[in-house]
Image 1 (spheres, rainbow, N blue to C red):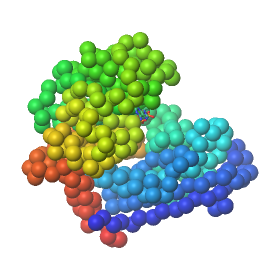
Image 2: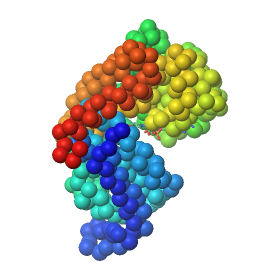
Image 3: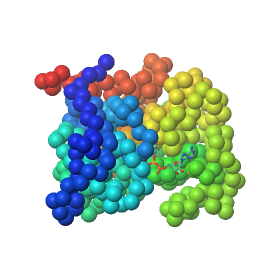
Length: 373
Ligand code: NAD
C-alpha cells in the first residue's frame, strides 16, 4: 500500500471569493470544487482540473491516485493530484473566468499542486490560474505553453507505445488495420501518427456513429472535418454504422480514446483485435481486461500508453520546447512499454499488474528520500 502526504480541500464560495479583473472588487461566484493532492514523493503533484456538473469527491480521489501512478511510471519528478469544479463548462466566458480565478485563489497556498487542463477546462483557464497562483501547465503559447491537444502529444505517445507492443505479437505496422473509438484530440492524432508508420485506419467513431472502410479512411480529411466542428457521419466516404459498431470491427489494433468502462464483461467478446493500446483512462473494466488477456489480446494499460500528455506538461513546466517534449514522450513511453510487456511475458500476469509494480517501485524509491515517509 502506498501512503503519502496526501491532502485535500473542498473549496466553497463562502471560503473564497474572486477578484474582478482590473479591479479590487471581490464577489462571490458560487464556486464548489475539490482539490486532491494524492502523493508528492516524486515532486509537486501535476493533475488536471475537470469541470462538469456531475463530478464527485470519489472521482477526484480516484483520478488523483491515477495521476500518482502515471507520473511515477513515466519517471517524472511529479506526484499526483486532481481537481474537480462543479459547473457547466459551457457557461459564459466572463463567468468561467470568475469561477476559475476563484478556484485559483482557493488553491493558491497548496504550493505542491500544479494544475493543468482536463475535461471542461482549457489553456485559457490555465492562463487565469497562472495569473492568480504563478503556477499551471497546459498554458496558451503566448505564455510559453505547448498546445498538447493541437500537436497531438498523447496520440504521438500512443503510436510509440503501439510500435513497441506490436513486436511482442509479431505484428507489422505496415498495413496493420486500426480502429479508433473516439476520434477526438487523442484518437485522431494516434491514427495520424500510426498512418505515418504504414498502418491503415479501417474504422473510427464519435458520438455521431461509426465510419468504416476496410480499404482505409482518409485521415487528413476526417481531421479537417472534425476541426470544422462536424461529425464523422458528415463524411462522404465509408459505411455509416451506429456508435457501438466500432466494437465489432475486424482489426489488428483497437484504440479506445473516448470514455471510461466502454469495454465490459457484457461486450468484450465482440472485440476482434490483437492489440489494445489504451488512449482513454480506464476504458476497460477489470473483468474485461482479464478476459482480453486470457484470449491473447495484448493490452497496454492507460497510464503507460497515454502518458504523452502529462510528459508534455512536465516539459512545458520547465520551459522546454515542443521538440524536447516529443523526444521525451518517445523515449519514456517506448522504454516503459517494453519494461512492462517484458515483465508481463516473464511472469504471465496482466500488463496492468506489471505496470503498477513498476510505478510502485519508483514511488517507494522516491519515498525513501522523504523525511515524512
Ligand atoms: P475529446 O473530447 O477531444 O475526444 C473524445 C472523442 O470521443 C470525441 O470525438 C467524442 O465525440 C467521442 N466520444 C464520446 N463518447 C463516445 C462514445 N460513447 N463512443 C464513441 N465516441 C465517443 O477528448 P480527448 O482529449 O481526446 O480524451 C479522450 C480520452 O482520453 C478521455 O478518456 C481522456 O481522459 C483521455 N486522455 C486524454 C489525454 C489528452 O491529452 N487529451 C491524455 C490522457 C488521457
